[in-house]
Length: 79
Image (cartoon, rainbow, N blue to C red; front, top):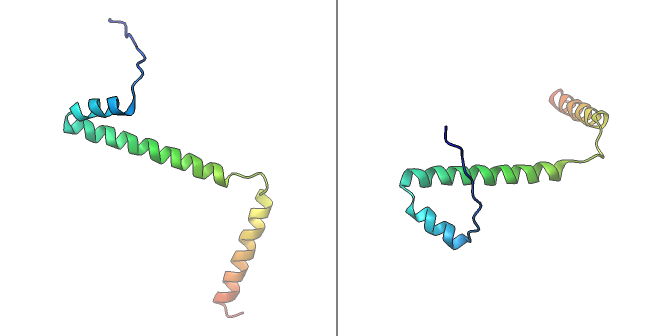
């Protein structure tokens, strides 16, 4: 079994684009999909972090849910 060898290479954006342009169309599509996934994951992580708070408790959320349910019930029953 052949042992895998890894190297680290410093590339700038222009060099990466030169490499990408040499890829076959199928590989470009795969790369595009992977980059899209990465961008979505980054955006989702940022979004989740922006909503994270220690100020809300389960009890506060339950109270708000009960309040909204009561308002909706009263509205639907003409109260």
